[in-house]
Amino acid sequence: MLIRVSMLKCIFKHIISTEFVLHFNRAHNRLPGNCGTSLKIMGSKGTVRVVDLRSDTVSQPTQEMRKAMFEAAVGDDVYGEDPTVNALEEKAAALLGKESGLFVPSGTMANLLAIMVHCSQRGSEMICGEKSHTFLFEQGGPAQIAGVQIWPLRNNPDGTFDLDDMEEKVRNHTDDHEPMTSLICVENTQNWCGGRVLSLEWLDDLAVRANKLHIPLHMDGARLFNAAVYLKVPASRIVRDFASATFCISKGLGAPVGAILTGDKQFIRKSRRLRKALGGGMRQAGVNTMVVRLAEDHNRANAIGKAVAESGSKIFQVDYENLQTNIVMININSQQITSEEFCNRLTMVTKNEAAKLGNKTAIIKICPVTNKSARLVTYYEITDADVEATICKLKLVMQEYETP
Image 1 (spheres, rainbow, N blue to C red):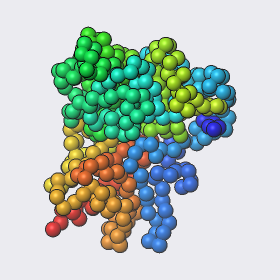
Image 2: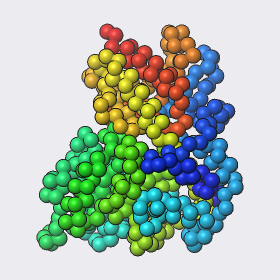
Image 3: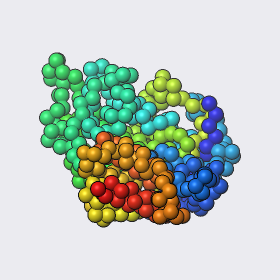
Image 4: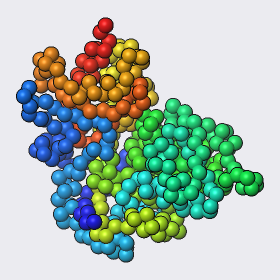
């Protein structure tokens, strides 16, 4: 597989202070064929804006990235000869305060590799939150592939879990009937808790307890830089006490593919070997992305969440006070409406709606989470005009459901 996406010209080159915000010439006004997320589609009813807020994974490479793909210097990454991958791994490790980094095709593989290295002894068990991506959405990979059992703990609304409860669940290797607790994994930001950011106080307390228990920590940092922007600290501070950490470059960071796994040299050496076994060794990978202006994504999500929270709706609610990053969870307080129905309605345009909203008429794509909640996610391609259209559409549809 030949993926030509250069790192050197796009990633981390305009990092500002501790927020890791890359300023670049925004490409929101590209031709429709290049946008993919915020489009205008011609149809029988005229021009209709499409705003895709299902996930930040739908973001597409910028023009600068596309140019870099064409110009990328490539080599064989399996042999460690791809210069752009090598530079990316080194820079990523430095940003997270770790000795080494490893590029992998996906965050799911990055998490699985970390689990396989930390839990290399048969009969191992890992602890994580019940709403973590590793537990819910990685196909049971730790059990299916690595032979590692997961003990999920109940997540609090803020994404944390009770640390006293965690300590009670640890198996201390003294009972031959039990598996051995070999890893504790946390996710930051916590996607299924609405993009909540784990506090430094909680992370520090977790680290102290894990150290006493001699259990390593792994952070699934798919959206780690969103957490860094919110906390106004370097990402390295957040993962300071973690033996390993990942971050995704194909979500809000805009790259077509990939994630980075970081840790000490021995950990990465073992991970590199296991990556090959999982089919993740890449020839001529030449990977790159950029760290986008994540604070802008947060601000746009905040505007949408605020509009819903202040709408006065008795049915549709947002926990606005705890809206921290680029994820907005809309909760539905009605037995007559499901999240799937709500999401489907947002993708429809009626004649009355088009007449009422005019040039703000839009198709809005968001994602059902549970039967009574839906999620929307902002990213670099979402413009202020998209946000305005989204708010208008949400208010109109919410009012429809409110009206008897």
